[in-house]
Every structure is written in C-alpha cells, then in structure tokens.
Length: 333
Image 1 (cartoon, rainbow, N blue to C red):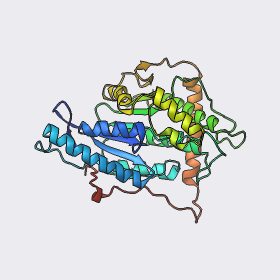
Image 2 (cartoon, one colour):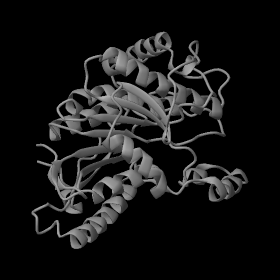
Image 3 (cartoon, rainbow, N blue to C red):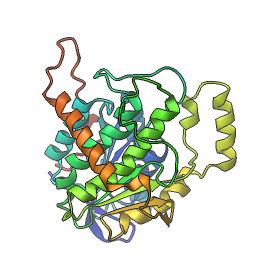
Image 4 (spheres, rainbow, N blue to C red):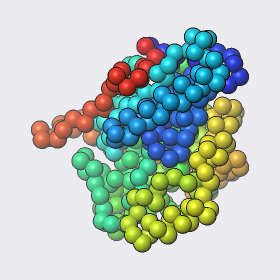
C-alpha cells in the first residue's frame, strides 16, 4: 500500500510519492510531470475528469519516453506511476474524503504541493454548496484540511515537505476577522488576497501546533508564471492579462526548477517562506503567531461545525472519484 520503488535521474532507487492539488493545469501540472520524469509516483488532484484523463495520457507518454531514454523499464520500474483523484476542493466534506482516500491507499507520502486555485477577481460573490465563500474554501480551507490531515502520513518518510504555493512576501490583503466569508463588502480581489494571507498564517500555525514534526512547511511565491490564469478573466481584461503574461511571465518549466530544489532539499527550519529562490523574513503581520493561532481556531471551529452538521437530503455527496485502472493509474498497492 506504499508508493512504488522508482528510479530517479541519478540512477539510484528510491520510494517517493508526491501529491499535487491543482495538478492538471499550469504550475501544478509542471511539477507533476517533473517528478514523474524522475521516477516518482505522482498523485494529481483536480476537479475535472476530462482534464484528469488528459493528464494521464500525457503522463503515460512521458513515462514511455523516460523509460526509452534511461532503460528504466529494464530495471523493473513499473509503468502507471501517475494517479488522478477527482475531488471538489471547495467542499469540506470532499476534502476530508480525499485525505481519507490518500491515507487508505498510501502508508507514506513524501511531498504535498498545494496549488489549487481559481481566481474570481470580478463578478458577484460566489458561494459553495456548503455556503462558503469560494476563494476562502478552495484556496485556503482545502489546504488547511490537507496539511493537517496528511501530516502523519508524511511523517513516515525521511524528508517530508508541504509546499503551499501562494504569495508570501506580497504586502496586500488581510484577514477580515469580523466577516471572513465576506458576506458584506465583498470584492473578488479582497477575497483572493484574504485567502493568500490566510495561507501565510496556516504555515505559521502548522509549525506552532506540531513542534516535533519532521515535516517542513514552505510558503512559496513562484512570481508571475505563464499559466492559463488569464483564461478565467472576462474581456477585455483577459487579452490584457495574456499580453502581460507573454511579456513578463516565467515559463512553467523554468518556474518548476527552484520549487523542486526546495522540495528535494528542504530548509532545516519547521516553517519558511520563499519568493522563488529568495528566503523571506518571517516578520510583520503576515506571519504573526497570535493571528495564526486565532485563524487556526476559527478554521477548526468552522470545519467541526460542517463535519458534524447533518447534510441536507437534497445535497449530493460529491465523493472523490477513485483512480481508474483503465487509465493506467497506480495506487502503489
């Protein structure tokens, strides 16, 4: 039930399992393909079955190319090292079931990279079926659940890492303590920035709550990366954003390199923050310990309230889709 024993680029065998949310698109997909090429078992989480199927097809092609180039097939390295798990990460119940699925099928996970995000900068306030503000639920709450839920599974590996991809070091946004769901004075940018600031505090709280854990928690700002983010914007903003990305953004493959360097050789400190290769000082309101503790308790109360609430009879149980062996997935079983 563990991750498979794989052959890395160095030619040495290793057992490594990497979990990536938002791994069917953009930067998350780039990280997934990077570790797949290096022989890891990669579990990609996404909300769309079609994108998951497309990723698995690309992963199969990558594995075939890698095996041909390195003769790993002759070394007994199994194919089918990519797994897609479909889950609605805006849902507390779905995120918790995802954690349960990963823990049931894998006794160890080496790295967790949290990339799932969908910007809603314009338009009216959007809520999830559970009644939560969309950005808060997807970009922060799911990361809280996965970080704490997978901690023990991570702790069974030699150098476990959680990387929370966001915007540490950007002095914008704040936690709206009196109304974290932004039921009043909603704005898309306000909601997005609040989720980023919440993730900074999530890392602080994780290290504070688990002082003896070997898990290294990294808040990571990749800078502007050439992803499909502008595709979700309305016109004419979409065209302007695409032009800016073309001129300024870092290609995905290049953006993956500093991430992988940190993931493969994490810092000694329990919690660190980086903007690409530059380590950031953990000072100021963004990393305030009392605020981190306050947000943790607020979040746990929220999760507990939804966990123990009776589900309305007309609300579907959005259960994560199990890996489909027909698509060449491998649970490491």
